[in-house]
Length: 114
Length: 113
Image (cartoon, rainbow over all chains, first blue to last red; front, side, top):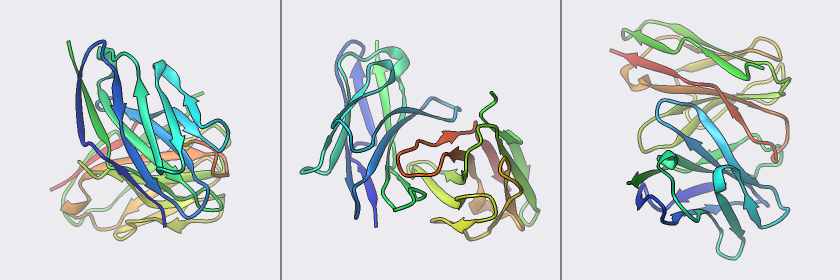
């Protein structure tokens, strides 16, 4: 069975400061991992994905994440927050053979203060 | 490309009423999904269809039925709506295989009174 834990339900940063959103997973197989962003009243948009290639993954809008197998983590970072980054972020794991069962974390709401 | 479209965007039902949520994708994806999103719980999978002609239960299938009408369309039916089904419903699609990301529709906000 697979599971995803997003360690913070809310994160607040000031504009221009670094962002760290934490995600831990458990998986029976070699997982694929994703980060999605959801702006208010919108659907989900893919930020980045890890699929067993490079462990440091770069995504859109300056976000990146590092896959650490020993720590079962896939934390999302950004060097400098922008007001437009305020949104909800979801960490997702896919590890069944067919890749059909995706499990979502509970989400982290990022707030950016001016 | 429209991507993934959902209708309706909003719906209010009374307890016991039925309705069907429609989803269509124009990306020639094999797999399609229905999720519900509730505050603090992320997205939970209701049903999915790995390919045309197949459907399988997800984490929270009770109270729902689905139909994979063709490769493009995947509908979700509530036969007898309950207040616990008040939620935002998202449809998604993807190519087959664990490395492919899902593409999401804009969602349907359903309220059951």
